[in-house]
Image 1 (cartoon, rainbow, N blue to C red):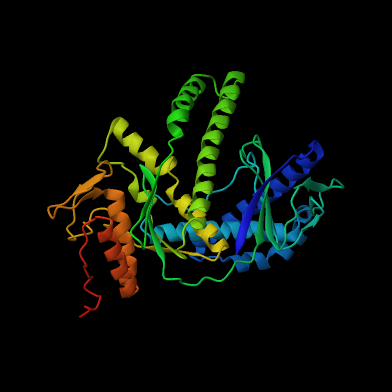
Image 2: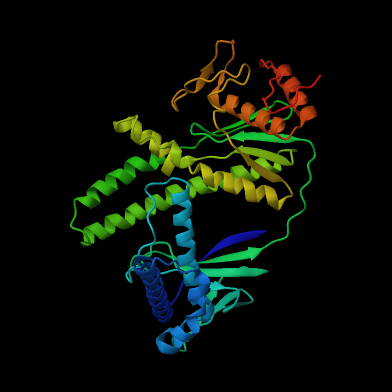
Amino acid sequence: MHLTAKVKIYPTEDQLKVLWELSDKCCSLYNLALAERKYAWKNENKSIKYVEQQNKLPEFKKNNPEYKIVYSKVLQGILKKLDANYKSFFALIKNGDTKARPPNFKSHKFFQTIPYNQSGFYQARNYMCFTHKVNDTELVFDVKTKFENIKQIEIYNDDPLYGKGDFYISVVYEVATPDYFDNGLYQANDAGITKIVTAVNSNGKFFEVKTPRSDKHWQPKIDSIKSKRDHCKKKSKQWVRLHGVYRKMEKKKSNQLSDFQHKLSKKMVNNTKANTIIVGDLKVKNMAQSKKLKGKRKRAMNRSTQNQGYLSRFIEFLTYKAELIGKKVIKIDESYTSKECYVCGKKHEMPLWERTMSCDCGNCIDRDRNSAINIMSKFLSQNALWTSYQQFVDNLRQTGLPMSVRFPESYPQMT
């Protein structure tokens, strides 16, 4: 399993000059490779692949010796990034995203991420060293941690415009994980807005956590600072000062939510006996309210689902933390799990602001609990786990919830 560690570094003035020189060459190569692809497609209707551009690198460096200051693997990494951007663009188009745009040229004003893949770096004690040929200045940084089985390292800036932010190195390394086995216990999770997670296990017991809305504390302050900043002349001393305050607030808000999600996901995988955790396959982009709502209501809903919730990131945290201890997270389609009554199967109109489902069959339940039960039932029935399904139904009845055994059309009836 591959993990990524983020380490802050403090380059000296001489090291900064070297990093910017490398960034400049990486930016130029990216733009040249992109121009070649665009020209070939426009004039020859031909698609150029990564391998073709990589094979041209030796000849390119021979004709342009100034690029020899950059380690060869770094140049290959830049071409891989361009290829990955194109693959992402085509994937979005294939999925019907009409707003997808192809990769564009990069500006030299921005510090470009410098990737070292497989080689070109080495770790001596608690120091990370990088290879280059710009001058005699050594790129050696204190990382304070000894990493094993390093696969890739990237040097980047968190505010790349003119390199105003902090510099970091991102270390991708491999760790061994225990083998997964199905112990017959399951936990279904529904990620939501009001409650970040609503979980139900095979015993019919629920676990709920309310979403911490740190944005309610930070957003009024951020909006106020942005308003003051926008009334200043751009790049003036006052504008720069307010922009720095704005960035600091945004970072604190993001760090608070990230810290909460890390702690919650670790607590969930460690405190459940189930080796199999089922989650809904979220489509967070589709949760945006862009047409039906207007004004403050629309803005509040979009902030909850898009830039404050980070629901997809929480699922990723849960996935890798479960794999680290030999458990497994399985994603299944959660279509209509919030709208379909888990007792009788009737579908209801359930906009996001309606938090309780009231069905004609007498079932009245929180929409997130209803969704978690449906996710569990769908997983057990799809995988033909009849014994576990029957036990789950019986355990729900014991908790006082109404429950009837319903089979999907594709599931064989038991007699």
